[in-house]
Image (cartoon, rainbow, N blue to C red; front, side, top):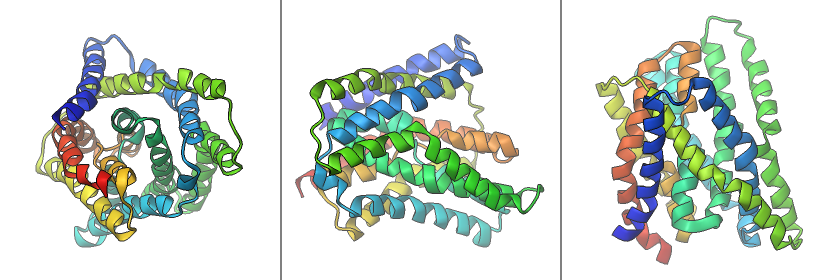
Length: 315
């Protein structure tokens, strides 16, 4: 078990540290970081996802419980935080929305692919794909709409922003390319090995570059530890995976998929939240510090989750 945890997290920590050192020495400008991010999300990640789908068992693609599990496991915590902040804590709509995104949107691309890939291999790409569709098609459009509605700009911009964001998400290669793979697998078409090898060759760069970018981001974060940040980190790193565990038990999911779902929920907060915070001028320090703190604490909490869910693989 200790060897599994070490071989999974030590390489991740090493590459993040390299990115952090590069960022702290100003070796890369913010524009360089944006370029690397676009490289990963637009050109490297889609082939990797497609290769993973083409290697996924056909039975997994026809199992309706998998997408339903991630819709419930991600959207219920999002809506719970949103409604709790809005109607219990009496925060304004924009603050409530941003906190919901911060606490229920795990960083599945920059952290999920390296960690789950080390633990479970290429088969982990399918649950990552399905899980990542929930933020892409539900959380991000909803967050955009609510931030627009809560702003002082035109109140009618909400519906337009929603449909515009959904249309933009559907045009992203990381959204539509994997569906090609799903269709091919469902049609039971045999894909030549050289095709999968070609996709893996370009896609394999995703892991290292994404972790390096995560290190660059950490080097630029403004750190201001507060009680609110401590609560944020506790909810994201411990409560969210507990909520996913409840969803796993409710849907009767077991085996490796159950472990993958819980570990995905235990991942640090997604970096895109800081972009929303900067754009709307709210929770800028808290979101940046939470992004950093959830990553630092993840190196303690993820091993706990790996050990705690180990028995699920034998169920």
